Length: 82
Image (cartoon, rainbow, N blue to C red):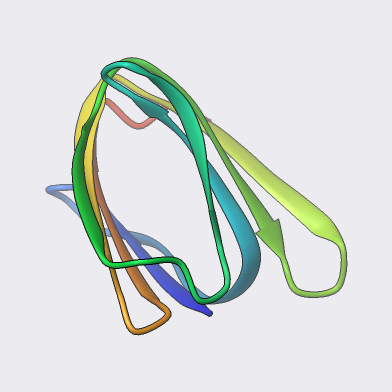
């Protein structure tokens, strides 16, 4: 699946990932390949991307939204912290 991570200022990451863990407003959840379509608000916490090639990318956010549709993930975040 592919992901695009955007802040109001710039694109943080675009490319293939194996999984995405995000801090939902009701708790953390994970998106895997062929996930059902979803749109969800995100709260403060850590986002972890398992990038193809078995490396992880981790960063903090204050809030945001995630949309998943047809193995395309859009992650819109505010308060990006490496």
